[in-house]
Amino acid sequence: MRKYLINFKNYILHGKDIGIVVFKKYYKVIVPVIAIILISLIYVAQYSRSTEKYFLNSLEKSIANNDVKKFSSLITVNGKKVTSEEVKPLLDYLSREKNGDAFIKNIKDNGKALGITLKNKKKLIFEGYYLESEGFQIKISTNYPSEIDIDSKDVGNTKSDEPLIIKDKLPGIYTINAIAGDDYGKAKGSKEISLFKDESVDFELQGNAITIINSPYQEGEVYINNKDINKTVKDIKNYSFFPIDEKNKLYFKFTFPWGEIQSEEIEVGKFPEITPKIQMINDKAEQDITKNVTSFYESVINALNKEDSNLIENVSEDQKFLLYSDLTKKYFLLKNIYSMDKIDCEIEKDSFNFDGKVYSGNVKVKIEYSTGKDFIGISINKEKKEKTFMTTCEYKDNKWIIKSINNI
Image (cartoon, rainbow, N blue to C red; front, side, top):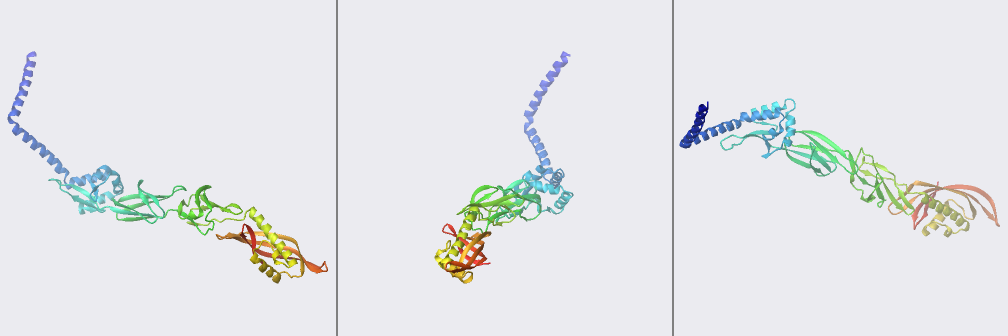
């Protein structure tokens, strides 16, 4: 046994030496032969991969297997490579029903489908097949500045008067979302489009920026949801964005000479223009008006008795004589003796307004008085009477004065 092992060892050693000797002797022949064989194998493999048949087979498999990575390696958009994420909308479309079969058939028969063309570009001595898409454009418009995403990927923002334009998109099925608003809630819109040509997508989001109109209270401090927003009425022009389905509320506070008063609170979002109303008569204003109107009518009685218009109070100087003349011509007779029995003032709060310069409004005044003749110091023919006047007041020089009166 030992003898056989020694012989085997010697054979191996001598065989190795023989191989080295042979290689050294014939390497100029052996190396080129091996190189030719390798190049031939590579050529055959590369040639088979560069054929149209091989490409179409790879395309068909990538669609059948929904292989976005493989599919993305087979297609470009206007000469630019695309990512797996970018081909997904197209692959999703081709995976539906028989869309993929129709696509492959058109590519095979016509070399074109869905705006995609089969192209061939030589790479050295080999053919290089690929798909080239012309790319489509999506123009997205909204009625309010919005964030836009396509298939949950942020692509930019729109402006009210300027659409967002997305170029070089592959054909396919896309979901486009528009989101407007922030501080006071968000309005959202979503649309699915089939993109096989340039498309325009319009969103009318359910909400509004707001403007306060027809309000003389320009310096009023504005509150939204009971929070001071550090803006005045005059600042609320196309302000923010308020979704319709959110319960946002707005009011303002205005400081009148007789105190600060809050306007009505209104929901915002449904309409772009609003005019919150304000009841400008508070308890103090009501007391001041009642006091000055009462004083006015009492002074009128005194002026009639003494036949002196200068005794009329709470009226401007240029109006005293006019009012006195009007009263004596229409309602009261001179030479009579008048005495006030009772006076009731009903302030018509809704009639009071502010035009930006003057506060004014109406008071319905009912007076009960007695009238008679003076006969050597004795009142005779005494009668009880009553009249009702619509009295117009206005605020001037820090007090309420009477502007006009009319019997009703």
